[in-house]
Length: 396
Length: 70
Length: 167
Image (cartoon, rainbow over all chains, first blue to last red; front, side, top):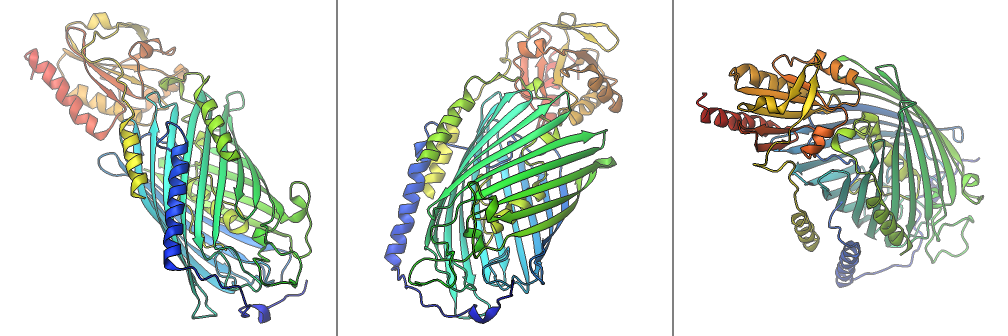
């Protein structure tokens, strides 16, 4: 396929200007909080829930992990996109039943995304070379029957900066078989453009999570989380031509996770299913299954498979060039209809003194034909990618 | 909202008719590979990867955003 | 935002706390077996201050609590103070492996694989421990094992021994 480079990028496409007064912005923000609150109160009896881990006591000892992932998209382009991502993560108990958890990463993105239809992991669509710094941290205090946590998250690139704050809480029953989780967060994003110095936009997103984790029997546990996100501001891509998206987005996701231990096979099976819907008309389903199998006393292998399908955003444009430009539209592949499959295999080796090393190989393929119910597109370019990871952990 | 109703039903189900598991019966649940995200670095990586390649996100926790994906 | 936080806090307060093994209630009697096959019965410990601990090989904090208990017993040499560590592993092998790897010589280890004794003490967390006085009553209980527990336990035990005239 011919590489279509920059002539269209940064072109000043005339878009319908939505001038929103400051008062209207404030009102919208208030309305969103009201909606969030109403939603929070709609669940009877729960005040609280939180994110993934269902730990009910402070970490016993510090733990640190170094992780590195190398991602490469293949075959379709001459300049394949490559992302190298080292991550450092740690968790440690502090004094007085307080725990700290944090991570930091520096992504290096290289290789062009030549088609103006495609984009990269960061906000930047140029992708000749880009670096992203990101991190998160959280302090959690554990009490007899509940815990509370507060933290922050940030992500920064040449033309994008996001900062967020998170608050979460968990309560569990005395027998610790049921845990309720509740979390809220707010993110403020600033978007600029390295090719248009006067361009400056922003976006604010509020998220809420409710979750329940339930021990079913001595070998199985289930977790159900529902998240709601409401965003206001700039959602488009300044590097893309013919890209004009709504200035608001509400998203719902329901995730079910189930872990089952099989004593006869000394393995555990993990199955996650998530259904998602948003106000851009995207509906998606995700099913991920992983098998954890210890081998001997110090090895573990984990094959995994992930299937994902999504419907296109209502304003996804499938015809190039578009006939009418005075409406919402995008050629962003991420918002089109497609399915994807990922296969992975991870190997872990425990070493003495609390060390362990691991590596994994993964293959991902995304194409319209994999969409549930079938799909095809004239503008989407299917892609595949492989990513390898290596890691090392130390538990003190 | 349909999803909300589904969640409430699942939540109600999750509380009833579960065997009352005693603390000393949780040996298998305590295994490292029975945790929901045994590898926190990997979980962050893949969540970010899929959020940047796909049109949906969420479900795992709050505050994991800021991916900058448009 | 503020309202959400207030809601969060008030909901937190509304959850009640259950207590495992009522304070000042008679400690439930039991008769278990030790590694060597000898009988370990609580009735034999009348007149002594007993620190009763429920543990398992797979319980994280137990890796720290058992060696620490051993230290405490070596320090408080009095015969009026005894530590009984009741193991709750369903497989004896796992427990024996753990005992080999840690110094627990000063403790009396008993086995309760079916969990019947743990049930009678309403054990709600792993590990759980109870301090029993010379009359056979529970005077204190601890859920889990924390840094702060260590000092408290030693204080409670020493206080009981002081009543008996032991320093």
